[in-house]
Image (tube, rainbow, N blue to C red; front, side, top):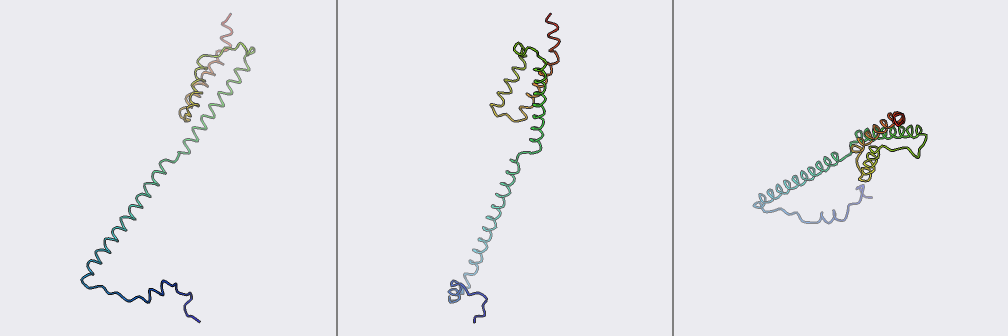
Length: 153
């Protein structure tokens, strides 16, 4: 029975049979210089790899979306859309004759600009001012609606 816990690989056995090579003492300085150069090359290679890794990680972190900012912008836009929708429903409910209800040209222009922005895949930061304008215009239409019908006399 063998005392080795595992059998030795064949390459190891072949290596054991190779003769010992002792270089000429005059070659030792050249061998040491070559080993030193190889060690320096290896260090620079590792340093370059680490630098590339740091740059890649740094770029990936700067390219990550700012989740909190985007979420708050989307939340604000959703609130403005909801307000505009509510105002529009209120306006339509207050108009007894829907077919003859005049649409404010300013509101039409804002709606056109909003549609154009969506077609151009605008960001929330570009859409929020348009939704704000639409809500304000809708509020103005509602506020002056009864006054307009009274002054038509």
